[in-house]
Image (tube, rainbow, N blue to C red; front, side, top):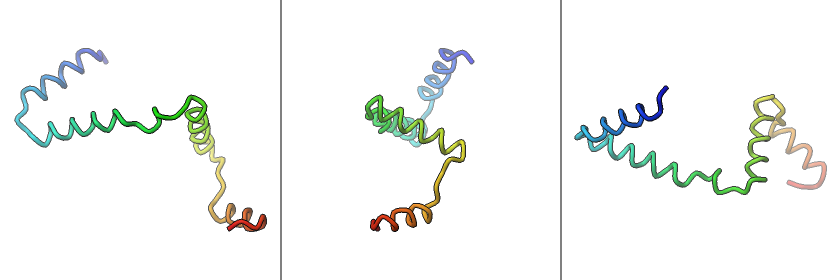
Length: 77
């Protein structure tokens, strides 16, 4: 895929469009991308989130019930 060609095609579609919904959807998408919560995290926090996702992908999870039982034994509820 040639990224420059794709960008130009998208721009041309937007420029030629009279579809207000399309324009608003593109605007909303771009606005959402500006405020990505992940980008606001420190490098260490990002690393921790990515490791947690990797653990999830590997099936390394604990059910809610197991957590409740574990912390219940510690006197936490």
